[in-house]
Image (tube, rainbow, N blue to C red; front, side, top):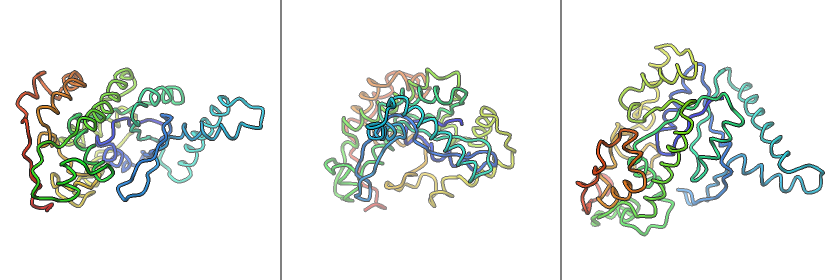
Length: 312
């Protein structure tokens, strides 16, 4: 099994869907590693469970091992190995595709655990590291949580309550911004230590030429996809095909909100840029998303942003 590893809101669903259209590739999202468990309010008002398989196994072992003479650590190891073998075997019963890829978007502060477990249980795995401009990631991330969080900021007055009279001076708040910046940077930093067994794919390059990026991935993982297959995958996974909207046409509630590059420019103030630069500006430079350290100096102090007419 190989892996797609990325921060959420970076185009992983798009990439996974494109690859799954190839005749040799089966893409899953197993959420195996990270030892993470919590529940969050869903967009529909119901609680959403976020849990990895290793967190469940740890909890299960605490009960299962109470009355039997077995070491909990050994049990967790055997359970995890058996579960992985079961998944791979089960996929074989429902799909003839020979090449398995697991989509992984590590939960916050779990990237090191995730990569360590991949190396342990899948030592020969190849990793597709998908990266997107962190400023677009944090913008998309905060939008993704708009309808789940307490509606206390100007962004809620505009997008949740659709108050066309409000002029938003700032889209982000410090806490949400810093949280998403740290989430983005921790995955990027962790993947730097796994570069020998990974290929770097940029969301922006996928937007520009998905066909070429899919060819690069197929060469990397050893999948013999034909030009016709890749052309079909590109066409069938286009933004308009999947969302029903033209690329750039926004739906704030959708997981496929807009599908463009650089939308962060509409939402960043100078303060937001300074915070990003302080926390992860070196990564923007290293990845080529900015050419100079003072990229944020010309950002506006206030947005003075009004809700677009189509949302009112």
